[in-house]
Length: 522
Image (cartoon, rainbow, N blue to C red; front, top):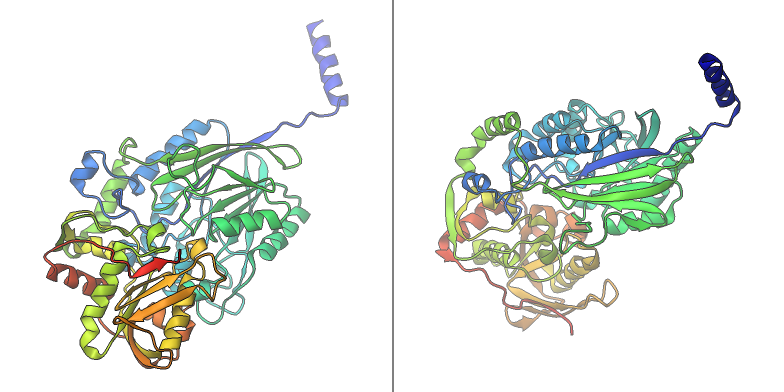
């Protein structure tokens, strides 16, 4: 009798329409790690072993190993996807020494499923990026670039890919900044295109293949991510990067909710430097539509135990660097503010320090003004002894001083470029010395600058001025193309980090300052 009942139940099940179950996925994500393999301080700079032991540090690869493992355990039977929003490269001596090798090793250890290309992945040209792609165990994606003319990378990077999780196909698409040719050194053989069109083309391709769950890994910034979400159909989730945006429902000062929803697309980003691990729990219906999305950032603070094997490996990798970075080079009476959101928007203490150091170094060469791009300033420095490692964390790019001559009109054009994307937090914002200026962020880009003074006198558009900057800016980086054809250009001066360290040392206990050299129009 029991067997008959079972058989009749089986027969009913065979004839009834199948009820499809929802599919849940936990997306774990990082972005803008910038070679912070060791723990960081609250200033995003180096953190001492004593402070780390006291629980005052954040991040580091060893905490991420534990954090990711714990998140996977929390997910239980729900499949997990670990992805990165780009810019693993550049930021500390680890990158200077190892290039992408240590990043590849740590990402493989963590078990990443995919990442997109950040602009800093091109800092040392296609060659170093190619070595990195060959060392990682996962796909690297970039949809809005034509790499067919670059033989080094042509077969190493995909526009999109499909991976399987829990028996379901997940489409992944990569994005990199459209202006990467201005931000880094991709070389002449790679061209970048509009992100909206590029994403839609890959969505259409994936959809035609029967993939209805699509995640974009975007190193393009929070603003662009919202534009992509609004301008495309078929995207479910955007994992962001580039703007170092803190999206959270619980962390004070967050720029928006986690996730931020635009046109039904779930947008997330996890600040930077491994300080947080993003954890987004998404549920899809059978059509691939998101029916629920919850989660938040998980802070990688002192409460997250460091994985001992990873601590030992990073210590081993750090050994060749210690002599350089542990050397005390100066002292600061107070913390020197180099926060990203400040130095890319207004006059900042670190900007003044660096620009003044540059100008002091070459003033006797007939140089009138200094310009330092705010995006080249990568951290603050806390009060007390200042090590070379801290200076190199602030200025990690191995830029050299460049001196040149341009007209006053060109200087004004450069300042206009510098403030043209201030609302986006772009790195081109000009920190200056030897001059002052006013800008109106509400005015149309290209007509925001006024009251430019050099040496206490109004700038003369027809006069030739001596300028010092870094070689990146002088050669057109961050949109400063007006400097490419400058007169008497010399790009091979001393390293900017060395110049800043030596200037700091000369000041005695350094007292950080702002003095009104950059003002907002009322």
